[in-house]
Image 1 (spheres, rainbow, N blue to C red):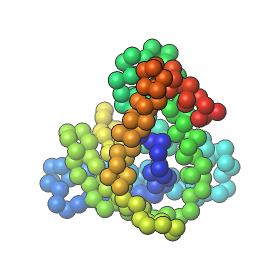
Image 2: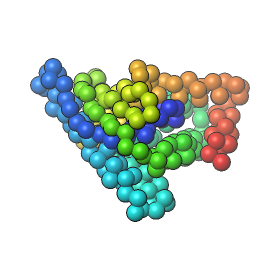
Image 3: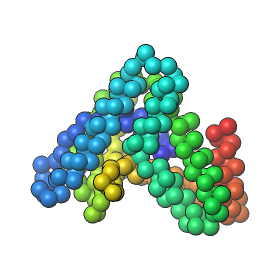
Image 4: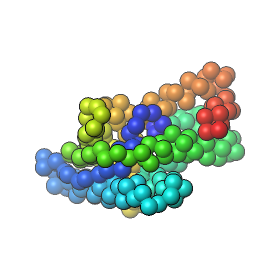
Length: 202
């Protein structure tokens, strides 16, 4: 869900706006989701634009923000799909650790190379009873704008990002398909995916 394209880089910038056409009852939850994303982005901006921090300090902060903003355990389980239930407890633990390390390895460097892209929240809408979709647009200096939608879930009084749609394509579905393909190529064994992830994270 979180491994393809550059969607995670855009988590460095957030600003809130809620579509006026959303019914009043749903609008409150959507506003909360937008405010959550804005606050997370403001914190990310302060972190990655502060060049007085060492690289190690910013990498540590990246990991903290990752856990604060994204429900990594849920995302990891969802991406593994039906193979989660066939994995042993040790395989599940190894997989979750490798999944998080892969996210950090793939995207931490991009965070540190933040170059001032602008990020605008263009709307929000309810998605089921617990989720909201926050629509955004990233304006880049070296290419056309990118349209993103962040799926934010409220659980036990907390908001977490559980999926990102990049130009209409779910990163969760994309990663789930890729992992399933790796497992199938290894005889349906989760160990094949674990080995591939170990190689990627070094």
